[in-house]
Structures are given as C-alpha cells and as structure tokens.
Amino acid sequence: MPVVEVTEAAAARIKHLLDQEGKLGTHALRLKVVGGGCSGLQYQLSFDAKVGEFDLLVETGGIRVVVDEKSALYLTGTKLDFIDTLQESGFKIENPNAKTTCGCGQSFGA
Image (cartoon, rainbow, N blue to C red):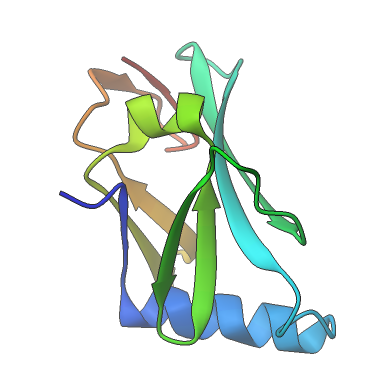
C-alpha cells in the first residue's frame, strides 16, 4: 500500500502551483503531520527542495510528494485530492487512519 495516493486533479494543481512559483523542476510537495489543531494533529503542506535520507518519495503525474518517516505512520493509505466546486476549493485529504476529524477537515485524531 502506498503512503499517499495523489489523484490526477491534485497532481495537476501541484504542478500548476510549482510552475507558477518557478519551482517545478526543483521542489516537491511535502505532506507532513504536526501536533495541533482541534483534533490533536494537523496536516501541513509546503514546497521543499530537499528530500531527506529517511523521507518517502511518491512520483506521479510529473510531480513529487515527500513524506517524512514519522508522518508516514499517520498517512499510510491516504488519498490527496484537489476539489474545485462552487462550494469548496482546495486540497482534500482522505486519511483512513484518522479516528476523529474536525469540521474543517484540517485536523484529525489517530
């Protein structure tokens, strides 16, 4: 089972954002779990030029997604999607390891 599955829509959006910032060939999206948020843990997305020795790397759709070893424990099997509708727009994270989530979808408990 991959650490994270990236949908075509998410890969296209990540690619667009990286290209817009001039970082397409040099950076990856880092998906990280940090303490905080209403449910105890929260997701953090950022662009990173470094891939560490113990980072897990997913390459799909012309982009790279990096997950550190500690975050991988909470993210295995997670699906990263991008939604753009009249009601919502942004990255959506579907995490099968989340026991509880908050209403905003940005934090979870494991």
